[in-house]
Image 1 (cartoon, rainbow over the protein chains, first blue to last red):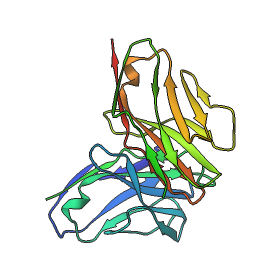
Image 2 (image 1 turned 135 degrees about the horizontal axis):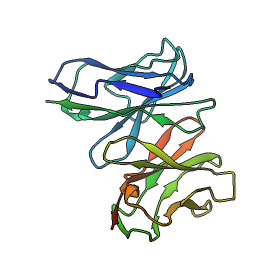
Image 3 (image 1 turned 180 degrees about the horizontal axis):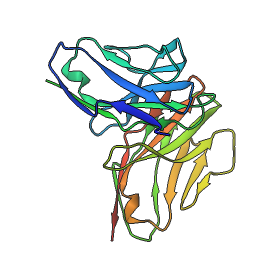
Image 4 (image 1 turned 30 degrees about the horizontal axis):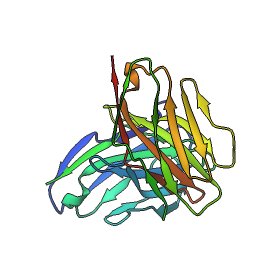
Length: 113
Length: 113
């Protein structure tokens, strides 16, 4: 199993551009999460999903959108990139109740200039 | 609001010795889960140890153990027989039933040979 994979690994965006961060897991986990990690800080939850078609906001959802059309994929969309969204983004998944261990992807480093 | 505080931004330990990393948290919930994650320079988030708040017995994983004091809302991590490979950022996290996991700001652990 590949576990949780994220693409791209690194991206530079200009202010106002949009992009989608991809996340895929092959463990058949129903719970999936998106976090951001700012320099010198811990992770903050952006959005999470408890299953296909169901998503909910976390601590810092503003400026982001998500969708969950399949169990495996949980893309994160940035519509109008801002410098404040410069961060490292982590996707994670867990099973079955959401209280189990979260398995993290390798992260996507995003720089908005 | 849930908050997680790691009061030691940096810690240092001699190889083969023992070190304890501190974590305190604030919550009004009675049922929650506590985690310590390790983040090496590769940025990969790796689970070190997990504790259910309803369990009085402290969790142990090989050289890693916790001291969970529910009344004091304290969850410290003890690393015994420290190894060079233990050098990393360590994050304490608390997760409630609503799937909202909150992380501390982290403690950078250096292991001296």
